[in-house]
Length: 579
Image (cartoon, rainbow, N blue to C red):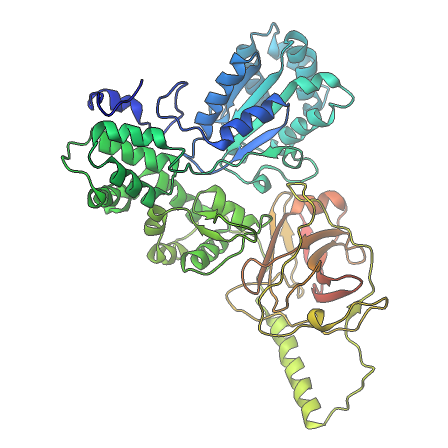
């Protein structure tokens, strides 16, 4: 359908089909807006890259997938779109895999008795069975490149065997060098989830071999077709109205389309900025708007999530205008970005976080933050230690007493006295979910000088005094003072601490985890969550896979500088065990 302001379509009919608010847009939809992600996704699929599009709801993932699938089919590729919501979350493992592969068989019109084939190969592990089906059946019968789109991937989160599925996909990628036929098969995942959610272990996940396709809001320039649509309906005020819509939505696809659609079918005679403000109030901010699906999803997600307190704390900092630097490896930041509340401000690195748009800023205000903090959670809260900073507080009090005694001359000063400085060892940093090199660290603002700042690295380790952990009652450190926390495989472990020191040059903090005499699992942390607040998330499965033994796991946090390792804190007794 071609729009022309001089020959506008009939509002009662044409615009019901033109603007689309919710659901995947059909192929050829006139108001589809092409973004850079469209071209990136199609080109990556043509190159055979494994891709994933993990982004908030109603950002246009499914519409982009439908469009990409159609274009690839036109170019001779064979595509299969699998919506995991249609398979469900209550199926057994065999039922789920058969349901998945049945859609492949149906779309590609393969000649095979799927149930019989699956049963015949039942002695094989499911990961091998899955990959072998694609090798022996799919790629044997289809000579073209096959692209599998897996939509609503977050519906796999409740499956006990989800990790095996992702391991199977990764095994297909890894087999390409020795089984070239797999170069004609690629997978593309789409959904509302973080890579941390979708796999227990980085080593078996496909997300550090695949390519992330960022799907951002569209710009006013990208959305010119929507402006033309408004021109056809309200030619005298289209520009003012279009700009006011973007003022509220910041180009959010669903919110923008929803406002345009309401205007196109409205009987209101005069549209201006004030009228748009009133429409926003009615659709999204009034008491009647509390059941609006987009906002309701965010409310429910935050309220019921086991990391609700951390999510609200982060959101409150950003909402109140504090500059919070983006940390791509922060689980909480990834959660808040993938549900849509927060996004990354444009500009040069280091970039900071911001509320995604003004509608969200008004809907999720300070009153909502306080109300949600007091809402009973509907699911089991995150398992974490129950003690609160008594160890840190005791250490600080003792340090103050000792300092006072030195000042009074009661205790002699011995220049040869040293403090806990570790002998430098080889640095081993685990790869992250994005499989990127360790980023260059930047300094963190602080009000006190630290030993790391003042010490000069040399061939011999320099004795240092680490800045004390700050006793902040509202947060807990993973300090182990005798009580053992039990984690099941796959449970999240949140390391959270306050440190007033700063990092410079190539320095960074390192979390070391393992049995008492083998803290071999190591994670680099290059920047705090905000100010002196440091946080890092790891799944227990990652640790347990490295140490398949029954043991009490300990941890330690150290500062890594050029040739010096300085301990900040460590667990006193066994910190946690596996169930």
